[in-house]
Length: 104
Image (cartoon, rainbow, N blue to C red):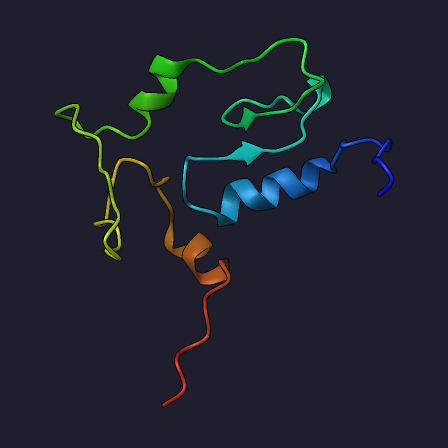
């Protein structure tokens, strides 16, 4: 198996698409390098010389006004306005890709 030696740089448009159409605040960049570090993203990679990760700021993204973090799980969907979702508009919702309806 050969090792990958190319760049991990991605087009800015790719990040913008992800940021506008994926409603979660949990954004993860795998195999990142220093040039991949981006506000609002957790970047992981063996070649990083620094990190912009701030545990307290990251955890605040998932807490409601009472400081309680929505845990999820159990096959439940998050409630509307859950603290880990980004606010959206009807225009964005109209453009965002949707899963096809189930076939009966």
